[in-house]
Image (cartoon, rainbow, N blue to C red; front, side, top):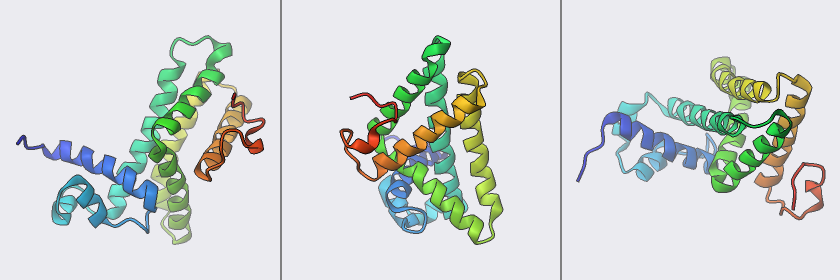
Length: 181
């Protein structure tokens, strides 16, 4: 049996945390569930991360970074008039192939709002920074057009809501989302 390094184990914890937090939210997910998914003890989990919030932040950062990277790669070498459609298609593929990424995004928004309401602005600040990087990536891909970027991300948020609520692709609420049948 090959032993994993601490860094490899950290990576497995982050992947497991995305799945667990995506499905249970911050408050509904125990560190015990994450440790069990990875196959480690809770004490070992806390040697890798100082606490649950640190695990959530690492998972949330990874979720944002992965989404940003999907946008970055999708836009490479694409003609300007095709970028928006390519970005949209890449995002739809991401959330179709890995629904936990979508659910994790939704959990990030809930966790930041809860932390802010509880008087913890630092928690949200870090995640707003990761989201801003995603925004900037889309903005640059769309030729620094802030209106087009806002519209694209607005449609993206609508799509997040529709998918997370389980609306089937043929439902009338998808009309106008730029989604083709």
